[in-house]
Amino acid sequence: MQSNEYYEPIIGLEVHCQLLTESKAFCSCSTKFGGEPNSNVCPICLGMPGVLPVLNKEVVEFTIKMGLATHCEISPKSIFARKNYFYPDLPKGYQISQYEEPICSNGFVEIEFEDGKKKKIGITRIHMEEDAGKSIHDLDIDTLVDVNRCGVPLIEIVSEPDIRSPHEAYLYLYKIRQIVTYLGICDGNMEEGSLRCDANVSVRKRGESKFGTKTEVKNMNSFRFVEKALEYEIERQIALLGDGQKVVQETLLWDANQDIAVPMRSKEEAHDYRYFPEPDLVAVAVNQDWINNAKASLPEFPSERRDRYIREYKLPKYDADVLTTEKALADYFEGVVSSLNKKNEETYKLASNWTMTDVLRVVKDRHIEISDFPVPPRNLSEMISLIVDGTISGKIAKDVFEEMLATNDSPKAIVEKKSLVQVSDEGAIEKVVDEILSKNKEQVEKYRSGKNQVFGFFVGETMKAMKGKANPRIVNEILRRKLDSI
Image (cartoon, rainbow, N blue to C red; front, side, top):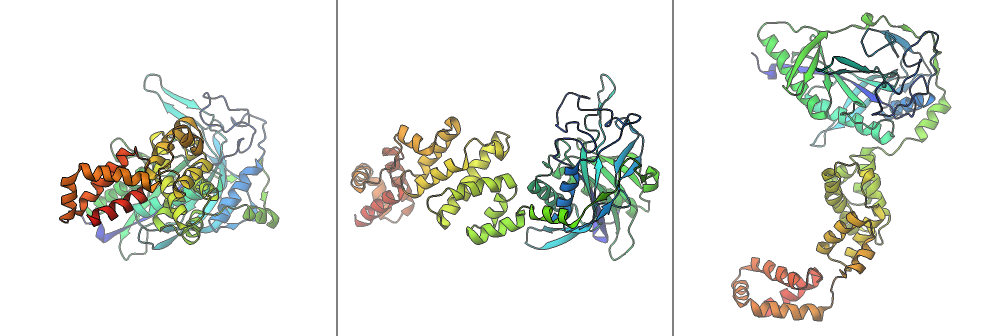
């Protein structure tokens, strides 16, 4: 077997995004996930004789937005086609898709590596289509079919074969997910299948221009599985070629339990689907006004928002990257910032720290979305303002935060109710400090002998004696002054 230093992988991804429309692509049935099996269906979904599909305008609008966000050309005219194949969860025996004339083409996304370097990944096309149903394999009964998903609108984003490593594939898929969620056209949930990824993989000797025989890997329902599946398939193909064997063009299913890709079927070519223009739908005409309106509605995207946070709030790049990962998280942070009494680098950084650590900790521990986080931005902002103006200490703020989570009360109400106002009276603090120093003469001598780490002991004892309510800055100043003068 030859090492992969002699080979390079060629990867192209096909990403399917389920669109967040209320009704399906060609009928008025609900797209809501998790309904009773076979409850969100109608004669159009099922392709009954004599029915006619009607295109959902919002599907077109969402697709145009994605095309603009990925620098695609928007075709003034695109047509639907029938993609014919038999599968148990496709009752009508064909899928309405686009083939020869897609609505978006010739675009790109830019991925960014950890070292700051960037790379453009070309997008061949983005087209509209409808989803098929779902087969449920129950070992105790048999294969069951739920056709609720039939007719749910999708866009398929087909990349150029520009990806050269599993990590690049990860970054590309992550970027696609960021774009669709920022646009609000897809929730990006891979576990529920609203974002799905198939990969075309081949390898060739480094320096060669001709592509090798490709395989398609399916059934990857997380970013980690995409990376692991690609690593596995690349190594498998290199091993075959290194042993003098040939790679067979086929479709493989990723088995996450065994960490292997298993053959599913020989890989289809386009002609196997017998595409022909959909006779029941007219061409989709997109004029410049439609494009201009879609362009005007585009949001500020993650990289733009990140750069603004660094420039406007003076945040470190790490903070800005974390805060702009999800649109809802960035919106929450900006809600906190907009309500601050004092707006400066110190308060912006405090808002960043509380959002990245405490807020995200609760979101992760409770397995909720940031949109379900119980503390509104204005309350977190109010608490930060109490820290900044010296009303409460950072330590007390932790208790206030937990109380906010439990009661939904405002920080000011909690501080007042629990008498948590920080003590900044220098005389009161100095009296406690004198008591601590007189009780701990041995530690005082250690400090005088140069063991400065003992200073933290005195701070801790003072704060404990004052039940965490003493102003830490004043405590430090008084202790330093007294210890240095002994």
